[in-house]
Image (cartoon, rainbow, N blue to C red; front, side, top):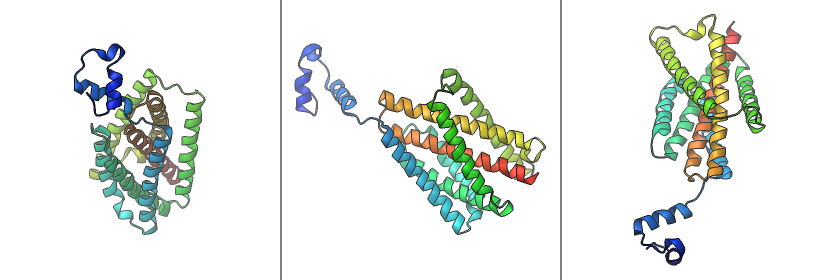
Length: 247
């Protein structure tokens, strides 16, 4: 009936003694023996992707390859959309995304650091402080990630993404950006808030995945989501600090 003789013997007893097709038996056997998602596995994958970001950023920063920032931004966007919407979990694409985004971060950080010395250090500290605060708020139940919260965040993120793409188009082809307006800091602050609260969705995904025993490959999706949110948060904080320094 199955590839495992011990499993075959157990299937002959009790309620399972009735006739069952071999395909159903194999499917049940695979479900039982499937490796599950764990907190340790997810953490290791997050650290691996974070290391890829650091490598890309470090090489770009120390070798002054700042001109690669904007090509890397578009390549990273494409890889991110591919990884996010692919029905198949693609660890290679996710790691490539982390590396390319690291190049983007290193390039854009170098450009802003040349304009406003010390801004990168402040942005890094701000990113980790905000992420830590969001984790504490989630851990102690100050932020409830329920269906309503998820629905609101989903629509808000989609709306902000569309706005960001439109603004980028105007910046590239018309030379104008909403961030240079008197209300630019307010819009940048909204971006920081959205990125920060998105981390709670990632924390909840990881918690549910481990609690419900999702397949091991889902560790990659969870790690990808958390890494993407942290990158987004850093970029938004860097942009907000640049606006304040420019005023």
